[in-house]
Image (cartoon, rainbow, N blue to C red; front, side, top):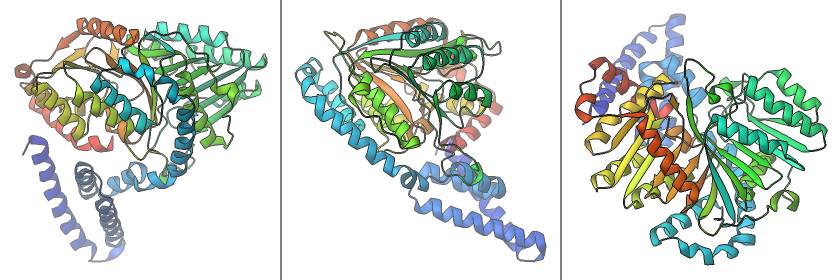
Length: 505
């Protein structure tokens, strides 16, 4: 039994004792006793609900520990973050609508790519078929891509492409800020809308809760359609609060698309002095694969507005000449019957023959991914994980570090990026297949958030990601297992406690 399991067992036993003590005194009567009894019975009821939902054992144990140790706080926390039984009911309709739309597109263009699939190796074709089956999205060989390595390059390219818009601009973001870069983008959107360009702007209601009313009103007054994804008027009773739209998507005229890790805000340009340089990765997409990205946006828009735009004027991109390499855009989220992106990541890791290079700001894997990474390393695969050296979210940061000892002992090389904050979300396998998008290597991205990732098969952009990764390593410090295991006991306690909460983060 590892340290975390022992700590979990300790808390579970302590929680049981608290309950026995609590129930004994609550029966004695009085207003406080009656209140205590009601809370206790409510917590016990929730415990049974969680137990019979057949969640992962780690999640079940974690919730029972939290509810048992801190009944009131645990009860409130469960109302906000724990009601996963609502997920299927709330998003089931969206899942079937999205699947129908994607399958229709696959039937129309899938046969055109069969011959070009032969450039992929056997195990790569298996990975592609898995992604195609789970994600309902075809691979495109008529697509060009360009890797954008930081905020300066990303936003300068975005601004340039927005200025070229003639017919429509579609934007979907988790975080949008009313700051310098936010206002610069807003002014372009306003200018384009007044010139007759159709502009639709979808933002996450929780991620962008600080976005000012004035910011949104100025866009609406210019004729921009502005919609919040899953607005939360009463978060205490709203089952959608925990399922957020973490996607970052831009489509210009159906031919140009953007996807990646950068939200809209000055900190992503390195303008936050407390964070410093923001290392992130975005992707410019041109050609057929933009159709998949467009469809993801249009289905999210339809879900929120009930207005459909599945017409040729939005879904007929101009094919880009590309003699090699395929591109596939995959959407994942709580509306899907499979953990799509996690399943593809798992397949990438387990089929790797030479190397697995991962970059992620938040590393909280579930047991499947964690075991796959360790086994790959023990099998002789070159496994590297690049993470930030300083936190922007402390609990997540410390929870991530609790996984490091086992990884280091299995031979995984872990690097902490120290030039600034590392926010890229990348997996590169064998130097030939890569994923770049919005999905972190954590349980929230795998199971709760709406995400989107681009999967690259033997493209020049994959080669660029490899070069950028090597350059990032130069600005990083590699952790050594012996020295890392000598860290202060207080940090170990903090990491283990944070890890206990990781299934809830």
